[in-house]
Image (cartoon, rainbow, N blue to C red; front, side, top):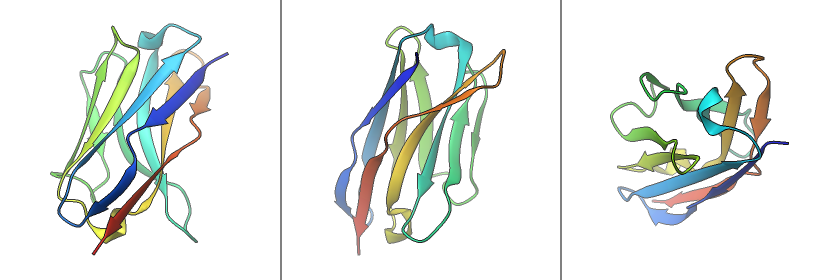
Length: 118
């Protein structure tokens, strides 16, 4: 059974930075493409960033390009989201996602709250 545990959320002022971490346990990490999604109050969950199992390819939502960086450390079974130049509209619960490269099955973490004050 795959488990994803996020950490690193918190309260930060606009213009500040945070780094989110997500650790996968229960299965071999490097067979999963990893991603981050977020859900703001009253809105649907939206894609933020993703990285392939090898780390060779990344994708970002237009709203975070140039500000956020996704990375992974397969030796630590971890994926990270570095968030710079944070804006109040980045306030949301951020969820870690793992997609199995063979089956396409998705796993989700419990989420970590990010609040950006103006």
